[in-house]
Amino acid sequence: MTTTAPPATRPEPHRAAKTVSRPGDRIFAGLARGSGILLLVVMAAIAVFLTVRAAHAISKDHGNFLTTFEWTPSLNPPVFGIAVLAYGTVVSSIIAMAIAVPIAIGIALFITHYAPRRLGGPIAYVIDLLAAVPSIVYGLWGALFLVPHLRGVNLWLDHYFGWTYIFHKEDPNSAARSLFTVGILLAIMILPIITNVSREVINQVPKMHEEAALALGATRWEVIRLSVLPFARSGIISASMLGLGRALGETMAVATVLSASPTLSGHLLDPVGGTFSQNIVAKFGEADDFGRDALIASGLVLFLITLLVNGAARIIIQRRKEYSGANA
Amino acid sequence: MAKRIDISGLSAYYSAFKAIDDISMTIEPGSVTAFIGPSGCGKSTFLRTLNRMHEVTPGGRVEGKVLLDDENLYGSGVDPVTVRRTVGMVFQRPNPFPTMSIFDNVAAGLKLNGVRKKNELNDIVERSLKGANLWNEVKDRLNKPGSGLSGGQQQRLCIARAIAVEPQVLLMDEPCSALDPISTLAIEDLIGELKSRYTIVIVTHNMQQAARVSDRTAFFNLAAVGQPGKLIEIDDTERIFSNPSVQATEDYISGRFG
Ligand SMILES: Nc1ncnc2c1ncn2[C@@H]1O[C@H](COP(=O)(O)OP(=O)(O)OP(=O)(O)O)[C@@H](O)[C@H]1O
Ligand SMILES: [Mg+2]
Image (cartoon, rainbow over all chains, first blue to last red; front, side, top):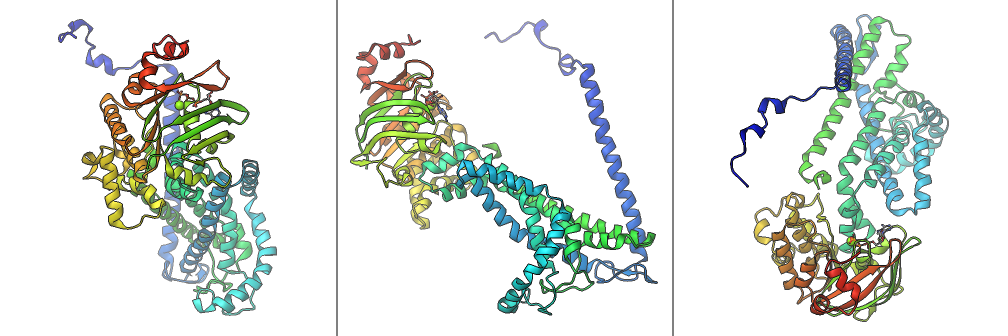
């Protein structure tokens, strides 16, 4: 190799930086930029609208917006707060997640690693179908089937586990229209989406990672523990967050099952409480302008909770990024 | 430690496709045997029948016998998991567990075998990493992820992981094909050191490598695409590379193949 190249062949720096621009590229870039800006403008408009109206309602609230149990913006002076709603939303979602996530992971692993091929496909298909059932149908099923049938379960729980406080029931004979029932119903509703996304993530675990474990003499479960779950972990967390998002925002199913009342009870089986979206559908029809502003304020809080949950999930996923399989 | 492998009448299928046909050979304990042959002739498939990894592939099926000393790996009631604990394997592409630290990667097999004591694990991990010529490069970062190592280091990590459980046989499928010449030499040296304790089988496309590291060489070939691969001959490496008894072997080695 010669050390000096003829100067003429050396590319000029400013020419190298300039690229040929084609009409197709320009149009597409313009479209993409335009839709991006439009989306931001719409989002900003919604945010401003909601915030202004919510702030208006909260400024007139004569109760403490965060700690008041009642939701009576029509009183003079208006008194309303989100304590019961926030509690009900969070508790019913926690119950739903506690039930749905382990079962969903179990089903996803069963389909991908244990079921014979001929069985795995149909099961996955049926679960896909479940995801397509409208939530009002779940709500009706919950009210007509789940509520009466859970009565006995409630009695049993109260009798044997009443000492745990959370399973104590004030009035053992009241209907099972409680946050506990709502949690079970929500679990059934979010099970398909968590299962399906988890299954897809698990299917994407590279064969070579599983073979690494197999070649060491790992049993099926050990392969799952050594190779599959660590690799699929962040995907499974994302799947759970999708489910949680649905559980937090679910409206009709909760509204048909829960017997709402402005009471906050630590006993999960008591037929009291409420959730943000259930409260909004229940009150929106009869609310005047001010009442609607108040409901908007509660909706904004739900939005913040969802945002917080997603942020937390993102942090969990990021924290061990160094160890994630993505770069292997 | 090292064991003799006695293969007789072995055929392997992918569903209906027969990938290797009726292979018989004996692999002496404590020797290095190289498998050479054109791409697609079934070297990997054959290697994977020796630790029952072939049947992991959907549709994978094996006929014939593989005796490890006197035990048939395919005998009824033999657990493939146990087989794989005695017959270790190193793959073509380095595949350390990406979510585990270097230490945990090497300790993974030990933990499967129920080794739990911290100082015992420490000892074996250090010994295995030294055995794989990797200790000096990683001793200060044992808790860093294994996927952060270079390709050659990752491959040696995989070797360390495989020898940590003290298998009796070590199978290597083109272990150097993704590595630079220096890492390749390091692994070849390593094979030379390991063969006193393990029976080693290595697949390679590199004739010089086969000539350098192996005691015996087996040449595989297939009549045509879609036909099963066959064992053409197995002999002392010196003989295969100087004076093979089959013309096809000589053609392949001297590059007059196809
Ligand atoms: N998973 C699989 N499913 C179906 N056929 C397969 C599969 N893996 C390999 N085969 C076929 O089996 C035959 C032998 O493949 P194998 O991978 O054993 O060849 P090889 O000698 O290792 O080749 P190479 O030198 O390229 O690695 C080939 O015809 C291949 O197409
Ligand atoms: Mg191969």
